[in-house]
Length: 334
Image (tube, rainbow, N blue to C red; front, side, top):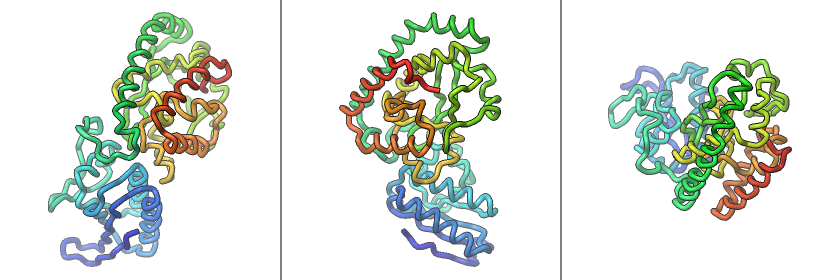
């Protein structure tokens, strides 16, 4: 861990400034220690009004590094402290834009001050800023995703008419439900499902008891779910539109459970590791009793297990297990 160096009464800035060099590799171990030392420095030096994070030596950062920056930003906001990022490389800038975090920070680059990054969060990247996991750069995995998505969309087209009729007869409202989720490194996207809840489900969420523990929401008897919706969830038919997300590259056939932004807001730094890979339509959580997994720490454990054991053969095994689970009437999602 690099040492925090306090620089007071700079000629450029009238207020005390603390310069913090970031480590060359900003991963989970360094990220946890970085946030802790940042918080301690804030507590020990209440007169400090500005912190500068120097990225000049940083050549790798994963999702845990993003989590540490978010955590430091929250601490700075509570204390009314100005937070500046300096010497940000194009790779780091791409990561910040992916996670839509450039807007949070004041960025100084080669003598220029960019008050806020306005780069689009949805701007396509020509190449990956950092390869955080082998699955992210695997062309074979991507090819399997494309072929699987095409097969899945064909099945969706075949079942589309009866599903649409059932949804419309059961509950007025749209056919599809789109929800903002987080993909690799926190990049936001809209995930699609066949609607299985009443149209104002999001507004009614606060009235439903959360039976899960941690940064997930589950209720075995959620009153917002329609009659047809329960069937769609039990058979996983509601998830068929996600093959479109897979085809676009926002998701994979196999990966981690895609979190919502409000779930990510509650993450501790180690839990950000879930975002080192793309989310999947299925994964360890799906084949290991997704309806019965009600503790977020168990979800994290399963997701990290997938990352540790990942291989193309392992993906194929999980796909086959998922098919078996779907035909188990007790395995549907909540």
